[in-house]
Length: 433
Image 1 (spheres, one colour):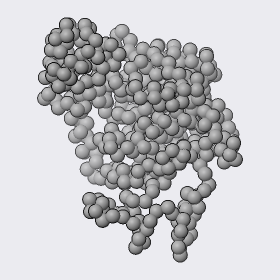
Image 2 (cartoon, rainbow, N blue to C red):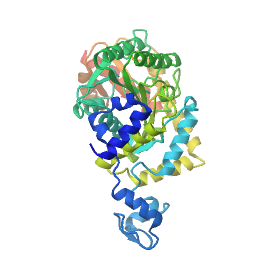
Image 3 (tube, helix red, strand yellow):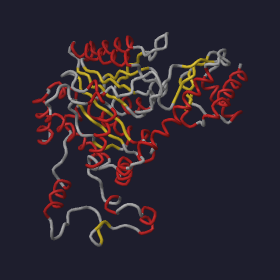
């Protein structure tokens, strides 16, 4: 093991040996090298004559660039576009995002958590979690209604075993009892569990109520008390899109500093929160089991920088600059609020249409109150057959999940078109019948 990795492991063990136990073999071996980047940083501060360390081309005291590209980006200083961004992301962006997290999650006040590290959006953040904490055979607890890419990220890439529980009760709420039962089984068998909490959920579009959210946290504490190490990951990709009857914060705030055997990890980003999907700008943030663990948080940040350095080197600089400008803008909050109202209007319109009962013989719908999606539960036809028929005859696209569920992204359907959309889905069901 590299001495730098050993040094980081000792810092973690000193603050909380349980977190060291949570790391994968790769996670324990990760470190951030004291190499070219460190020497370049030192030179940036002291090399007042010539700086021959940086791996970019310069001209006239700044980065070299092509004018045909700069002509399109004239609003931005070349130094904020063309050079490499730091491995952990631009310091100003990390600071602004942390402030945003505290503003939007009051439960984080008074909690100790790391500075967000910039990732290449949420999927990259999930891959970092998988690399740092999952070895072959480790168990991951997830709802049966889950984003399919988790399988590639955690099972195919890292050999993790996904253990599913029922997402909803028969009455239509989040099935906390099923979650707790599956977590308990994993605890008994492995003594370690990665819990993935994706709210608003993809594909169902559901976020737990206040009572359900608290029950989830209490279940995690109870299982941790029994001796299980838990990495509690909040995938907050659709954070902020809460429309009715749900939590309006990330569970990360309640999981932070909760218990020595619980490491909370928050994954979020500008991707969907700020409607900039192609920017690929996300964040990963850690919160230790108790407060007063600065060394542990620093070590986890260094290991995160190490895996970033080893895979993509750093995240795109222009995207980070664009997001900084948005967060600084005096119009940011008002414009974001306007888009939120558009999204909420679409979600509520879907409920209005489906609650009329006109389509009850063909399908019902799973609970949804947030995010981009909702799911129909088909009663008489196969979901994949319906999906193909919708495409072929009506030019309507939707996602089939298993044999009974059809995911509909109302996020990309204008409110006035929603009645026609579900009318066509119903007609397609009748065609097949």
